[in-house]
Image 1 (tube, rainbow, N blue to C red):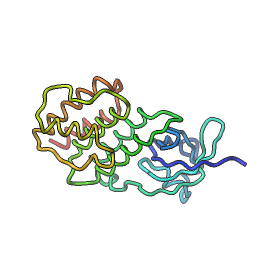
Image 2 (image 1 turned 180 degrees about the horizontal axis):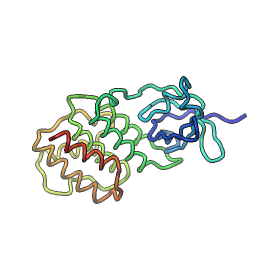
Image 3 (image 1 turned 180 degrees about the vertical axis):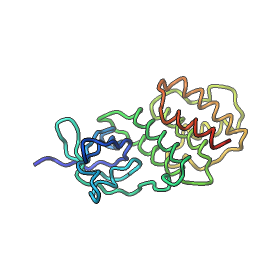
Image 4 (image 1 turned 60 degrees about the vertical axis):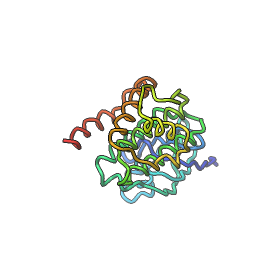
Length: 220
């Protein structure tokens, strides 16, 4: 009998496979990034259909196949349905998923990255927090988790911006989104994080290109 493992994670990618299946990429706490097939998930009424959506967070029961896992069942605790009704937040969320997929590795403890992703998606559902701020907090903290040197801003900034930077660097993920910034400080913070991102993250994200095109529409 095949051994089943239960992993805590979130669906980063969900793509059609064959006639009725879905190929999933999960970020899991225990085993990092894993690929799993949800057989029959595209059939109406299939119990795996809802769990195979991107953003679905919960416990996934999997058994190992020859080259990938197979999804047996799932207990989803958060679908992040709010993102489906907010186009701007959904664009930011899709970028976070793509970035997490880029950073995550197989067979690694990705607890901290998973915590960051979960808390950042939750922050996108809070109207009081500007999505621009959530994005930059996510980017800075992700670089910290991945071991990049980001202890200080890469340029001269105000005291308020320096305080926000250090708060993000040293705070646990569950406490990250407890502040807002005045517009002029947020602009500083954005420029500083972007400078570091371009230095340390040598990757072009398709969802970021879409997000930036959408940002023009949002601000027009």
